[in-house]
Every structure is written in structure tokens, then in C-alpha cells.
Image 1 (cartoon, rainbow, N blue to C red):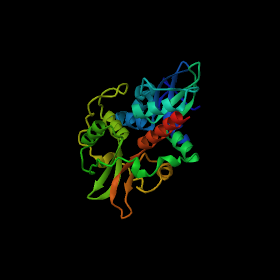
Image 2 (spheres, rainbow, N blue to C red; image 1 turned 60 degrees about the horizontal axis):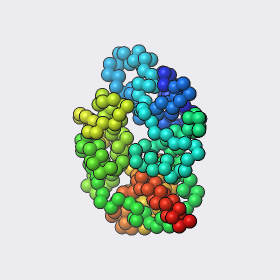
Image 3 (cartoon, rainbow, N blue to C red; image 1 turned 180 degrees about the vertical axis):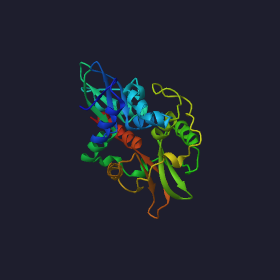
Image 4 (tube, one colour; image 1 turned 60 degrees about the vertical axis):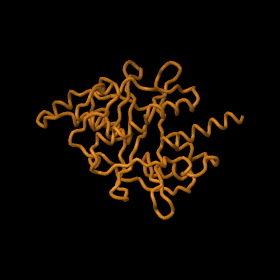
Length: 270
């Protein structure tokens, strides 16, 4: 299992994330998991260095513990998958370090792992995408202040917003990117999630949004939405009707919620 030490230089995390194409790394100290560091944490930790003339010196002094998120939620290798997925949904995180009975790191469980498992085991009882999407679409424009977009996400409990120009989808903006952008500007500590939206002075949604990941028909089976997310490596898709009218948005959280619901139905029926 790939990991990084809390006292290692930040460059060690950069090398592992980039070379292995990872999004997150468990952080160890004394053989125990003490945090987690994502590619966004690293990127915005480097952006906090304001003086270009001192950049090389500052990078050399930064340690993984300076940018990691701690404490970190974990899963046990011997526990049922359902509560682990429920924890990811509840905390809005993309992955959990998996520990054995002795508390030793054994691997990582990510939302992508759950999606890939469900693709291999299609669930006919899910029905169509339209049955699981969020129909009351919250959207923003590219010129919306980034702080306003993050506040809207937190108020609604959502993790992704479509970015529209008129009726045309031009991108999506993720809560994790907005939060990381706020931390990059020095908003609070990384070890506790602030209750209020972090200050993002002068930053607009266009500065932090991602290209759109594609559409999916509302009449399509939910299984197809999972495939599209995995293909495009995105956590949200626009749901459209046959003529191309926007119906809603389906996110990875909707998919995982459907997975949990399917598991609970199977359990109660057995």
C-alpha cells in the first residue's frame, strides 16, 4: 500500500501522487495513520507560498504534516462495506484508509472502487437515472463568486454544481476544489472543516471549475451513469431529456446512496 510519512518533505508526496496517478495518500507516523493528503492539498499548499524569490527554500521546508487533513476517517478490513460507504457519504470524502485488526494500514477504499464493483454487478432494481437524480437543479454561472458557490453547496449538502452560460453547460465546480481554493488563500487550518465558507477574494467559479463530464439521458439505466462517471473520471453528470433539455444532475453521492438503498432492500428481503 502506497503511503507517505508525516515528517517527509512535501516533494515526496508530489512524486508519489504524480508518478502513480493517485488522488490521495494515507499519511503515517510511527506505523499509524495520522492523516490523509490529496493532490489538491499539495497543490494549494504550494500556492500558499507567496514570495516567488523564496519558493525553493519554502518548498524544501514544507512537510506533509503541514498540508495533510487530520484526523482522518478510516474503515476496518473486516467490517461490512455498507457502513464504510455510509461514512464516506456522511463526511463527503472520496476515500477511507483501510486498517487491519492491529490498526495497520492495509489499503484504501475509494468511491471509484465502489462504482467499479457495481459496474461488474449490474443492479436491475435501480431503475432509471431520473429516479435517483436531483431534479431541482442548483446552478451557477462562471462569473459567480467562488465563495457564494461554496456557500450554496454547503447549504444544500451537495458536492457539485453545474456551471451554465444561458442554458449551455460550460463546466462543473466541485466543493473540494472550492474548499481547497479557500485554504490556498490562507483561510483557517486544514485540520478542521470551517463552518462558514472560506474567504475566496477575487476568485470566480471560472477559476476553479472543471470541464463538463458529459450528459446522460434521464431514461437511461443508472448503471449507464456509473459507466459514464468512470469513463470521464468525474463525480457528476448533467441529466437531459431526449430533446436535450436539462432535467437535473446525478452525482456520485446519488449513486452511492442508491447502492446503500439496494443493499438495505436485499438485507430486509433475506
